[in-house]
Image 1 (cartoon, one colour):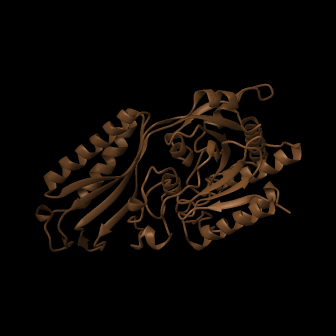
Image 2 (cartoon, rainbow, N blue to C red):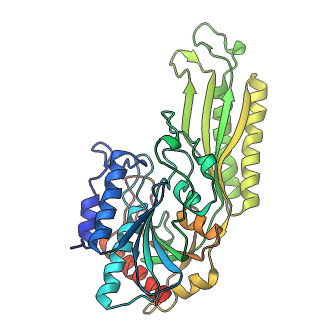
Image 3 (cartoon, rainbow, N blue to C red):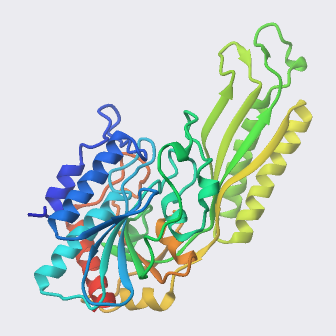
Length: 394
């Protein structure tokens, strides 16, 4: 027999969880994430769903019913480093539970309903966010993806067979449920919301190069220290984002030779930038780059900037969002934007009519062990997703 929502959530809770921080390490194609993948297949089989996979590792479990273009839901099971429990898995568990609820209602779909799990959504191992859905939609080619490498230098092509994916053929609509990554629903007093748009966002590698030297024997005026340009750039990113009301974060750093008593020869920092428009994103990154370049030129160092992943603004179908949000008891669900990237944004950009549901996060914190959602709100999310699937597949 398939497990109910709370049993499923209890089964997932210990997998990949750090005993020190309480956060999750579910990086793609590692033991914890593969255990979750096997769990999903078992749950799908227990429900009599037909499981399909591609050579990338994406999986869809189909409730074969009716005919015509399928309605797809689901999310991802991987996490950021030391991440929260809900980002991704909530959408997968809720999708399975929504299938159960529809069957309990006696609902017979007029169109097939699929539950999906996309791999490497976070980009925590191979550096490109939403890699699985990008490959499934053709937004990224296998020739490009195969060369991506993790921090140990292992190529993506060494991990998966790879190639073209036909997993999304026949999909007519996609609905992703996700824990909210912010406090909008908390402020509105709503358990569930519907997405209006995803802000444009990108990841940029800033390579500062200088000259390694002795920390004691080298006079300050004789140094070509790239750490100084990096520090100035990180401060400039914070200042410029605050002034413009946008988002900029240097959250990852590599230093060579990384010695306490050595002036570094190279500092590489990764900028995550998110803005309310494509133009605002371009302007913010250009301004941060200008500050870094100017400081590097004064220090006798150099800066090069490489965009590693850039996603434009995604506006979800306003008609679909309004239809999903309307007529729920005494109030409509709020329609809100998000500054976080999702597989839903990739499918929407590929031309698939797409919607997103958010479940309230009482802390407002995400990508952290403090990420949370209450059981009643999670149940409300399951019912909201079931209602949405019934509307779309009925």
